[in-house]
Length: 104
Image 1: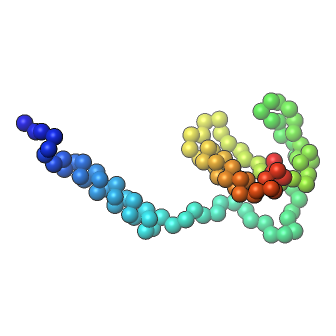
Image 2: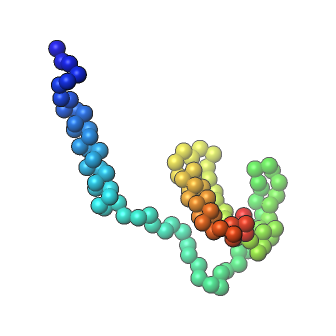
Image 3: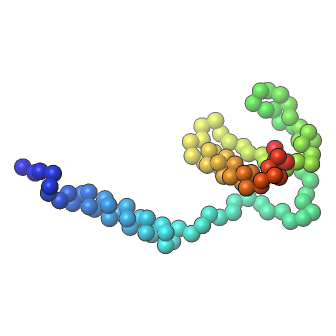
């Protein structure tokens, strides 16, 4: 009959696997990479277009001239990439400080 004081080889092995994973991630994980297109100045002006918003209203790009416009297409069922991307966009906008009011 086993009691709680005996060693648990499965638990120790699990701890070693987790520790090794963390160590390897620290050594070889690196930093995030840029995904997107970087434009240099003068920035190209996007042509006007119209889309339908969540309320069914038409929204034209012309309405936001002079603002920084972030356009993101997500899916109705997107459990990982879409929320992560939106979270990253929020962090970017937060880092803009006073200029964040220019982002739409």
